[in-house]
Image 1 (cartoon, one colour):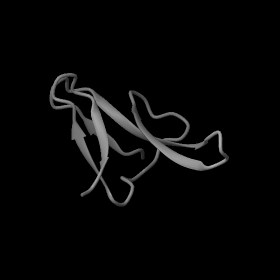
Image 2 (cartoon, one colour; image 1 turned 45 degrees about the vertical axis):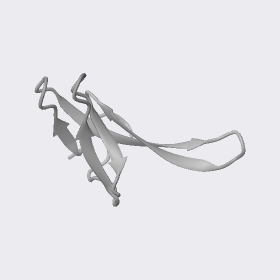
Image 3 (cartoon, helix red, strand yellow; image 1 turned 90 degrees about the horizontal axis):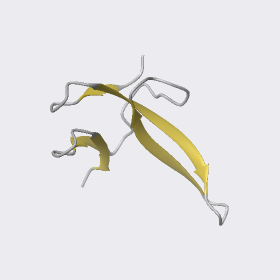
Length: 67
């Protein structure tokens, strides 16, 4: 089952995804993003060292590194 978050503002459910992206210099980074449906790249758990917040204006979830 994919990791999901319900928006407090809209009540819509968002699913966490990850993608491995190669930069121009050859460095590889992992991108995390939320989508409206669980698709390819959906992950089951929140990555270690990250927390979820929500944009107050739009209600979209954001993934931030813990301080």
